[in-house]
Image (cartoon, rainbow, N blue to C red; front, side):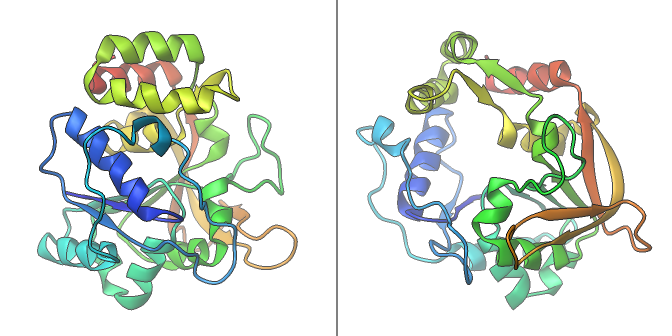
Length: 265
């Protein structure tokens, strides 16, 4: 239904989304820019290094400012019970939406976040914090207070099991062409300092359509906003009110099969 951008240079982030959508033959998808600054405190993510790799591809230089929140609100209210809201960045836009229109959350089908670290599995122990959560910790806390019918988090302790080497990414992205060919250009910025890619956000996206690639547990998430670890997500599977669902494990082979089936790689 649409794409919104958040944190730092939201116009350059919109350009990335536009370029990828164009390469995938989907110039019809609305793209709206949202909050560039955090709610109160937190590092945000000011830089958009992948933009340099594709800045010479055709794209708009400007977008109307701050249209993301109203776009989400109107879209959700026009389709009650139908919209899945996927968030794969800092939670600032979602927090602003839910704070200004609390009923919007109840009108969703579901919220799915790539956010948090919960179980201490795969090397991420107690006290760890995930980047999207800590970038704007107050927004993360506000978002987890929302009450959609279904609230799912795919955390760092699960996404870090979905990894491909740089060479494997280059081979499969090149074979796919289209949108992944553009992603391959952006990935070279990452490969200057990394030997692999972890498919954090794509895993969260795949669960929208193939939820069985993960297994889940219900409970309650709370978020630290003060102290030494703002943005740390705390998981309580024994909570009386189990308002949240987290992924606790993933089948990486099933994930990659679905991801590349859709993207062509």
